Image 1 (cartoon, rainbow, N blue to C red):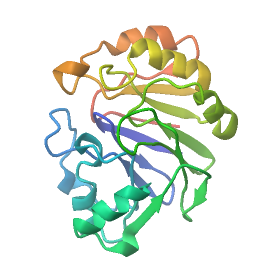
Image 2: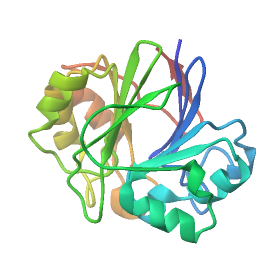
Image 3: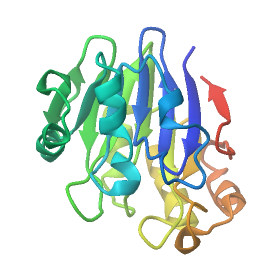
Amino acid sequence: MVSLKWLGHAAWQIKFKEATVLIDPFLTGNPSAAVKQEDLKGIDFILVTHTHSDHVGDAFTIAKREKQAKIIGMFELYGMAEKEGVDSSQLAGMNKGNMVDFGKIKVALTHADHSGEECGVIVSADGKTIYHAGDTALFRDMKTIHELYNPDVALLPIGGYFTMGPVEAAKAVEWIKPKIAVPMHFNTFPPIKQDPNKFKELAGKFAEVKVLEPGQEFTI
């Protein structure tokens, strides 16, 4: 059984049998944050989709405290993390390409259509695969994400303005074909105010849609 907890904005905590994973842990300064960064313990991996402040967030602070944690993201993140004092042994600077085996989990970085050196992430363990889209517009290779990885869960931004809105995110669900789709990256700040039930209405034709409040979790 795998548990997924939405920490607010695009931040997630995923607990596999042998690994606890954070994705985009923007907590300090996040008005929707469900936890404080100092309350997160026993972290094995920190996945970062890009270096915008609302995604890299507290990744380096947590890594410096949780010495066993490995930060995984685009190669450019490596240099930024070193400058912030993260030990190089904790860093895995990758690029978009294939699925990489980190022992307790497997990770692939996917295309994302956004500014900066951005990516989505695929994380797989215990027979379950989760796709976190990061910040992205809709792009047709989401069909390839289904073909290559067939994710059980898709975590998708719906806030608009900087990313997909509900209409585009629903089309993404149609293309990715996950069993479960969950909206994120909305209502944190005024420019990304959205009604997640609009996404649920549109995307519910293609997958089970779970609309969460920050701090809520579900299992697969």
